[in-house]
Image (cartoon, rainbow, N blue to C red):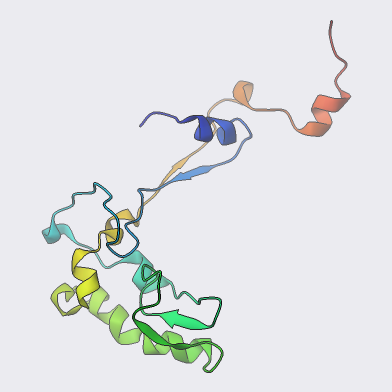
Length: 141
């Protein structure tokens, strides 16, 4: 994997850069990922997250960006109860019963992007000095 200018910018500032494949947002976009269905894993987004929209709606899946398959509303129910309502959906993933998942999950590839690579700065010589250090160093002409 080659370093992009954006990655280089943040690495030079001593930041750890997290690189992950593009999400399909519930199968809406192509990602170019190709892992065999036989190697499918439980979706890390579905089993670890619950999204809440600005209006309180809670979608079944974080990739459901339009909230088409909701489980309730956080303005009218507790987050703990809404999380519990998602339990059967999470269990299907964890039990690897992928055929029993809703249709949206059959075409979604976001489970493939759960892993991320973390790039860490390699060399102190390439790092940008903190602003205070840059300002206090006399300019050489």
